[in-house]
Image (cartoon, helix red, strand yellow):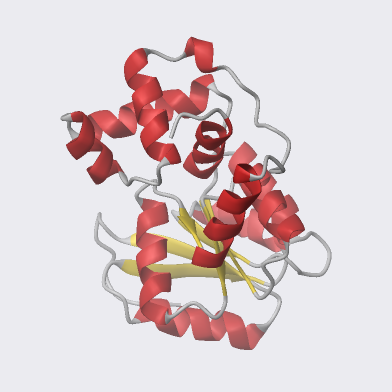
Length: 221
């Protein structure tokens, strides 16, 4: 774990992976990043949930394949209890893992081969409420939806959204960050965050990635 005085802007991270060497390596990468502190480690999903309840980390790096409780099940529980944002980090980008993680509410899905700088950036983006996907996964999702064979649709309540909220949802579908949405719609970034939260609440979604998928499925982008 990292040491030193924590500032109000410090992003706290929990690492969940069943291999010590990988946990140690990830901790070393994050230790060298400004504004990030690793506050805990877990070797399976059940322990990740227990640690998250005690530590309330901003972001949990979650492996998928772990003994006992797997990462997708743990992700679903973390999001259901509002304990942490989850960034799935795994060796395999199988469709079933991607679909399972996004449906569980993960804010991002990256492979363990991701460069260190990109991992650090992803942790900061997820902590800020953004969504992150590995490039190859983004391409596959786009191809799947273009062919009309994406995963079953997310619960649809578009008629409950205001016009501004629909505009924000369309921007999420286009993959824009909060700052980019603010610029496009000529509103403040804090206002964007408020709209995103309302969109997720009204549509009963757990992450902006799920919102982006819904926007794409409904032709809003």
